Length: 489
Image (cartoon, rainbow, N blue to C red; front, side, top):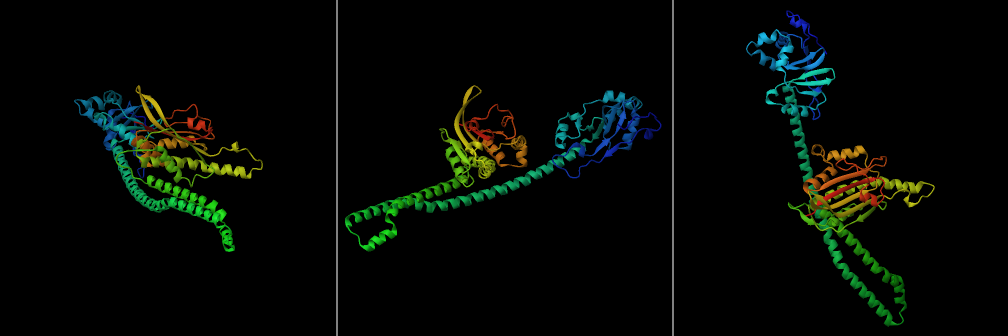
C-alpha cells in the first residue's frame, strides 16, 4: 500500500501521495487480453483522511475515477468521483462531508463494488460490468493484482477495449467465414469433378460388365465345339498336332474361365469403387432420405482400401438395421473422418509389429503383439426417456491402437464446444456437429491410453468402469472407440 494520510489541512498537496497511472502492457488487442493489460490508477487513502483532501486530489486529476479506501493499511472499499459529487451537491453536503473523515462520507456513499482479479479476461469483465444495476454502470472497477495491491479501472476504458476486441473478433469470424465459403466452393467443385470422373469410369465398366457374360458364353461354346471336333476327327495331321501343342489347348481350357472370372472381379471392384466415389461426393438434398448404413460404411472402407494394409484387420459385427432417415453425404464424411482417425492410429502400430517380427532373434507367437484391428459394430438400442422407450441406431468404431492421452482427449472434447469450433474446425468437431445438430443424435468418445491405468472417459466426462462392448469383445487392452447414436423413428 502506498498511502497513509497525514492530516495537515493547510497542505493537501504535500500530505497526500498523488495517484499513479499504470500504462498497461497492451500494445495490440487480442481475444484473451486481461484487465492487468489495461491502463489503471494506483491511488489509496485511509478512511481517517478528510474529505477535503480527496476533493483536492480530484480537482488536480480530473480523469481519476475514484479512490481505493484503506483502514489500518487493509482494503476497505472504493469511493468513486461520481459518488463524492452526488453527496456534495446535496443540501449542506459540503459542510457535512468535506470537513469530516472519509469514514463518514463512505458510510453514506457505500455501494456494491465490482472486484475482479487482474487475470480476468476483458470480455468477461465487461459482461459482468454490464450486468450491474443501472445506478452502478458508471462506477469504476476495482482490480486486484495481488493480495495487497488494488487498482482502479475506468469503466469507459474497459468498454472501449471490449468493443475493440469485439470488432477484432467479428473481423476474424468474417475472414474465417469467407475462407470456409471458398473452401466449401472448392470442395463442391471437386465433388462435381470426382462425380464426373466416376461417371466416366462407370460407362466403360458397364460395357465390359455387360459383354463379359457374352464372352463367357461364346468361349464355352467354342471350347465345346473344339472338343466335339477332336472327338470325331480321328487322327490329326502333324500340322494340327503342332498347333495344338503351341497354343497349349489343355491349359487354355482350364485358364480361360479363370481369366474371364478375374476380369469380372476386377470390373466389379472398379464399379463399386466408382459408385463409392459418387456416393461420397453426393450433395445432400434439403430433406433427409432413407439409407443403408452398412452400405455407407462399406463404401468408405473401399475408398480407404489403399491405406488398410494387410497388417490392419477390419472386423464387422453388423446387426439387422432398417433403412435410416439421414443425410447420406454428411454421414459419409463422418465415417471417413472416424475411420481415417483409426487408420492413422494403427499404421505406426502395424509397422512396429512387423519390425519386431522381422528383427527379433527369438520368434514369438502371433499373439505376442496384437494385430492392429478396427472393430465396427452396429445394433438397435432401446433406452427409456421420460418413461417412454426410445430406439436408437448405435454404430461403434473401435481400434486397438495406443489410445489417446488425457490431454489429447481433453483437446478433442474441447473442440466440440461452439467457441472452439468457431476458432478452428477439426474433422472430429465437424463430425460431432453433423451427428448432434444435423441428425439429433449423440457422439461419444472413449479411450484408454497405453501408459494410463485410468478408465476410459466419455464425452460427458464420466468415467467408465469397464471397456465398452466393442473393445471388450475384441480383448482390446488399449484403444479408442467412437460411438454414434442416431434416433430411429
